[in-house]
Image (cartoon, rainbow, N blue to C red; front, side, top):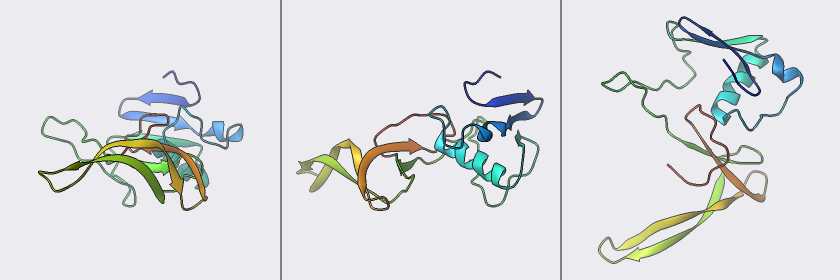
Amino acid sequence: MDHDVLSIEAHQYGFAVHLGFFDDNPDRPEQVSVTLWALLTRAKSCGADWLSFDRDEPPMADLPVYPEDEEGEGITPPKIVLCGQCRSEDLICDAAARWDKGAQGWVVEAVFEEAWCDTCGDTHRLEVSGTGVPDGQEAGHA
């Protein structure tokens, strides 16, 4: 399978990712989602050379599992909003809201691109992840 950074080998029941790229790239490349990066770094920290994604193997108890819907399609996992600098979820974000007289409350109309991170103490771009697909840096909430 072609990928700019990862060496991916497809097999009958899934695929495997070679972890040798860590030797040259200890930091997460932009083309790799935060969710996939967490799995790859965990496998590497356990001493693995390959990470296999196999549909017939039982899921690991301490990793999230996303059920399928009636058509057998995977249900989209919840998104995670992270600091683009330190990966913390401890964020405060500015937004624009409009008063809704009928609802008697504020309705958020826009969430701004940058957020204050209470962990690293600075303003950074948000990164939205959770699907396992590279999604770059986005702003917003699920």
